[in-house]
Amino acid sequence: MNKTIRIGTRDSELALWQAHTVQKKLNDLGYKTEIVAVKSQGDIILDKPLYELGITGIFTKTLDIAMLNGQVDIAVHSMKDVPTALPIGIIQAAVLERANTLDILVHKGNLDFLQSNGTIATGSLRRQAQWLNKYSNHKVVDLRGNVNTRMQKLNESDWNGAVFAAAGLERINLKPDSFINLDWMIPAPAQGAMVVVAMANDNYTIEAVSQLNHIETEICTYIERQFLKTLEGGCTAPIGAIAIYNEEDDMIDFKGVLLSIDGKEKLAIETKVDVSEWKKLGFNSAQEILDNGGTQLMEKIRTVLKK
Image (cartoon, rainbow, N blue to C red):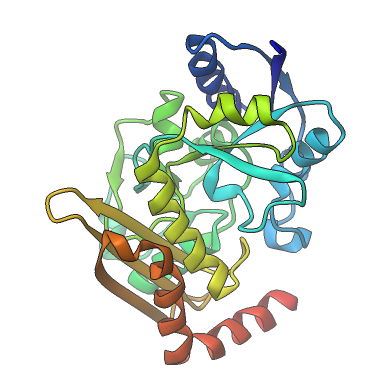
């Protein structure tokens, strides 16, 4: 069988970059492919914060439906946008080697505001909470849209800066000179990684795509997403997680954090385990946070988001 693998993608510049990257890798392996662009609700509804739309996976839902309807064979996503539970019939077929995991602050050439009052833009509760935890006198405003739109809004605004994932800006050469790395900010689970999903019953496509899998990235993102899932964050609560495999000693370093939406409460964990224990690391770390006040904090977060 030699079918053409149809790659579903959103039509933003970054999503298309990701789809073309996967297309090239599959073509290099000798597979035929075509790209099918699909518009997502998340891209269309820009005036409502994501958590108000009441669905996790708003950016992935449209492509899931296109796959289930047989319009496309695979979809390529920024893994941090993908809900921890995939729709029935769809499986994770490959995780590509991870890029930069850092969040960065894009600013306007003047960082004096870090010592005084400032206004920062982000559409992410995780970034907002961590920013307010560190800079409690700052104001955080909501920022929506794809990276190009967000960058444009920042330039036209009177904000001091906005927080972006470094990987997204680097992939489409949009990273300006005026930025600082926020190495103190714990990234979103699976930040910087791309995932390819396929239909569970499509063996031809699964076999093709599985050749793109990067095992180290797969393990680290699994740990982070397990942490997220156990805390029941979906895509809404301010949760950060990063797992890093250390080749020298065959250990995995893990950092996880859960914050209140206003950033005033913060529960963090930092641990190091032998690589053989990776399967339970995310779950155990989340459990430890839940046992130490996390359960009550998650309740508070749900109450705030319901209002």
